[in-house]
Image (cartoon, rainbow, N blue to C red; front, side, top):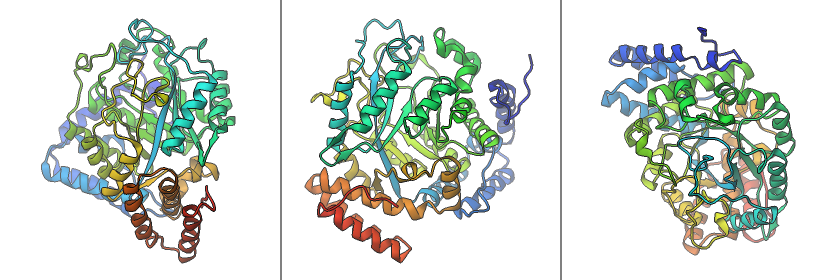
Length: 483
């Protein structure tokens, strides 16, 4: 059956249409040296430097693919420059921090790139009890974390939805010293509308699901058995999540499983689809790359991309989807993450452990890791590094807790109004970290940054109130303030 491209369709073969991607890649190769076209595309993006309530200019997957194919050094420099400026226009110099929490590595799928696949006999299988989850959360709170992304293998017997819901309840219930987890994002397998409704009622933040690859033929080969083998069920999951009431949705593709140009076009088409059917694009887009892990050799996948091309993809996602939060994990090295922060990334993980039960161990366990962690610094070291790079570390969860999700968040973000909330909220949550968890060196640097950045809050009344609240935090008289 020949499917027609339709971004507003609910059929995966139509909104991620294979022939449309092939035509897009052919068009990009044909026009990659057409500098008049290329600069006209870049000019279309420049209104994004000045977001307003009536307009949020974006380019489509075909135009973005032309920019990706162009290898002119001057054009690439313009792309990087524009991405930096757009990131500052929408998200300022703030970087939100989170940590993954692995609940279970039992899995019935056969994914060839993941060590949790069902026939891996070398990896120990483990599932956390609720008491163990509580201990993990306390360990994370003692670092200073406020935001978690929970992860679990797909196994209806070992990790049913009831287990996930109980785990979310446990995480939110733990109050240790001044610590509290204020937002739980969820990265679990594609499921039903009813189960998405249960997750929404459990007050999750963002529902995250990585596509892995948008190339259907390759997808089926990489997922030879298990529920994840069903490409359409997996690819259409975000539509079901939205029907279940979850309006903050996180996309991602695992770069390295297929050609990067194909994946890039498919990822943007998915974002366009969410806008077309829901009026709400992706809340976040993640950009993981295939990395070594137990029983997994990334050299088996011959679609790796260079650090330079990886940086360009990040920049172009920022340009094409200016309103989305962009996430890079500790899969990447400090050097790669530093550059990515300048080109559009707005969220990073810190002090991550990708093993089940890893945070309560003094020495980082590796036997149940999902992938190798390249950036192994402590959270305090990451916070100090961000400030050295002139980024404000933020643990803000205010929009989610104030009901600014989905189209409400997008309206704030696309109009630029989100800056009136994010900047003071970032400074207050940074102040909490400095007061309760930071080393002396990080405290010294952090309080200087807070004092300096307070002056950048444009509204005088809000600036004064923020300063008052920070003083209450600093002197132990208050906590958990938000705008």
